[in-house]
Amino acid sequence: MAATDSTPRISARMMAYAQIRERIISGEDAPGTLLSENELAHHLGTSRQPIREALMLIAQEGLVEIRPQSGTYVTYLDPDTVAQAQFIREAIEVASLADCANKITPDAAAALYELLDRQDACTSREEFYPLDEDFHRTLLALAGHETAWATVSNAKGHLDRARYLGLSGYRGITEYAADHRQVLDALLAGDLPAAQDCLRSHLRFILDDVRSMRASRPELFSAPAVPERRTGRPARV
Image (tube, rainbow, N blue to C red; front, side, top):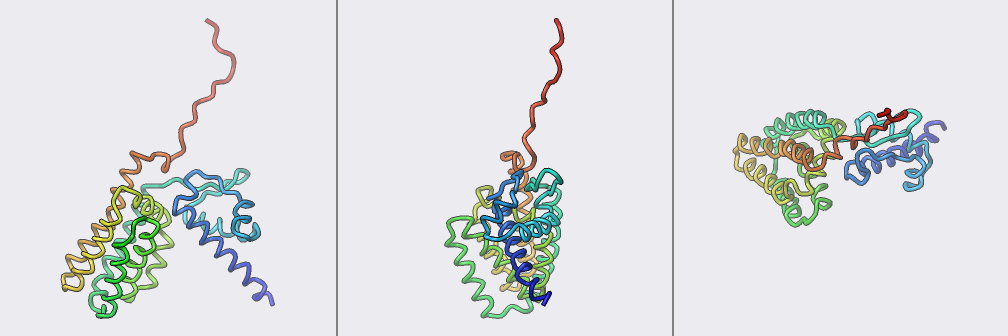
């Protein structure tokens, strides 16, 4: 009976986790935002308990900071964390292309090209982002390393945020879509080194995006400086 009773609460926790995490990654809840458990519970139609549990999971990824007696805040983008996540992702995805090249079938290739056509038709980052994820996840799955996607995803919360914000203008979605097509073309042509080089370059553009964002949107990386408050009586002249 205990296991049956716990199932709805676990489901509510994971639902809350997915939705709150998506709000943070998409920028709907900007860095520095104070998250209210009551407001989130009302918005998601659940109680505060699954919200609290979800926030604890998200805190483990470094996307929020829980401050006792203060509240839960969306963390600022951390360039070092982004760089580490990018390193992990590049190592896994580039290495997997060798296995993918040996296993990709004509039907799988056709499905990937259909996915790329849908990417070419996108006019916004909201349309493109999930299709971008589908392309990379599918390549891992075709290589026989589908479980590796979960490993990457669990470590790249900051990377996802930076990538999503980067799609807003630092590099166009058409350029990212063109990268995908070059990777697939080289892979199917039997030129594994070219496919790996293209994918490696594609994944490293996020580092350029972060450098651009730090210059143009510093508020994403740190809280605005608070003017120092002076106390006491002014000195006599």
